[in-house]
Length: 381
Image 1 (cartoon, helix red, strand yellow):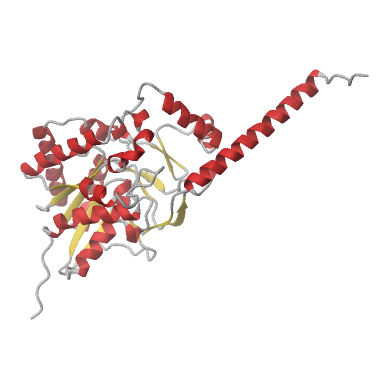
Image 2: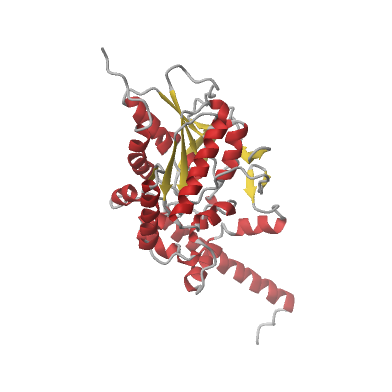
């Protein structure tokens, strides 16, 4: 006697249960694979709520932050003082008036200046300050770096407020392609959306929030990775990675003519000096994309149009050499990063930012340029 057939509804329910079970099993196996690869689960990747609106520069870091930022690649603490500068756990405010006989260095730039992925003590900003003080110099460093913020936005802040800190030296990070800086504060800034401490290029609709949640699924993550491998045409510019909210910088970096490049840096310097009200030195530091230092990472960048790790390295060297020949004080950190990268990671594998070791290599490359602008310590009698 044959078993009675299930009704349509029961068959659909049974199919749905089996499909859900198979999906959960696949998700679990892929999450385990991701754990084996990176040491954590995909859905535990988090971004910290650190931003607030700012009328001068679109957005700023929230003041008096004290939080822990954990990802599958690092666990760090983020502290800010009452002025919104990243600091150590003491969160001391920076007085507008400088201490006597002290040289104040203001570091501008995006997440690389901020030190994303590293404790504040491991960032190249803090390391440079410590190295200068260890040599007997009286210096004070201000980390004004803000993740995702453009050079034009920071120049707006410098003109409106930052000049009040009376910096004696300004250091600007130039990330990705040499020359991707905007040398002035525009009449009108194109601002992102700030919602709940996060930045969005467009208002966060329910659909966008749902997509963001689905990205934490290992099935979605690996399906996207497979799709990228078989994608024939690049859909983006590798130099735009990390600058999704900074279109003006991406466009600026595309210009490779040496004279136009030098003029852009001169205009940047002139704007800083006009904003500060003094003839202060302005230094520039170039930090390359991660695959330039770690060519083995290139397959992860090919869908963005990256074809090799040599061409961007040679182009950066050519541009920096041309700028130095025209009197622009800029250092290319690529050689130092590549030399140190033979033994350990200078950048995180999934994250695009510097590891503590990478920050140390940048410090090694940049420190001599900074030292040349700082008064030497007086010899004891």
